[in-house]
Image 1 (tube, rainbow, N blue to C red):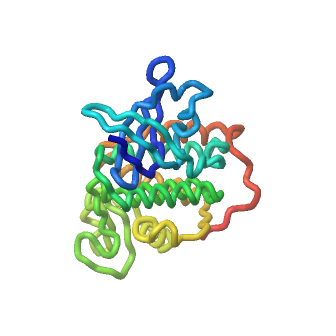
Image 2 (cartoon, rainbow, N blue to C red):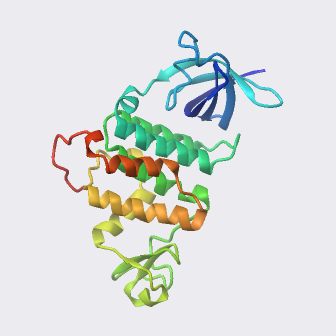
Image 3 (cartoon, helix red, strand yellow):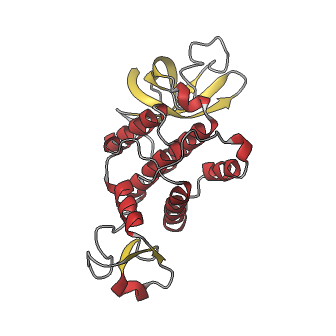
Length: 260
């Protein structure tokens, strides 16, 4: 039986001399893995449609084991994402995280919409690093993590100075700083950003531009949550760190960054 799904290629790996095994995150069925026979051949009708990040309609023949990708119809080749090394890298982090946190054939409209909005924003030239941060914060509930960000995780206070506690997985007010000796104190701007990354839908943000130290701080915070609470460290992070240590690989910034 052939099933037609809309989705994104989140992983594409060679298999044998001519085939690929692709993982698709689809709107209708969640994560699906399928064999794309002959897709490594340049002249194959599956060559373009099976590239990572591609958005398309996919015809998949179901079987008892792994299904097979019979044909595809391109919606977007996301050329901008693939043409820019930095954007490609952060898009890679997004799909790796979604792959790591989802089970096969468990549809989730929210995850599909998040992936669609993230790739659309990157394709439009928005800050790929900031977009990847939004995805990481918004995927925390999928990992079973529900940080307490609207009040103090210990006493429920909503006013005062706040810090982040990995022990409490949320904010602590200044009255409760003693609960966790390893708190990270937060400025009002950092508190606002954390809440925005976690709560505000990606398509409502607009073209947010953040200074590099702000993004680095937010990344360390969310990476530590995933590492300590979920046991996940993304391979993409290693490449990003290498990229950041290699200035000649980074694209020059046309305009000075403005905090937003």
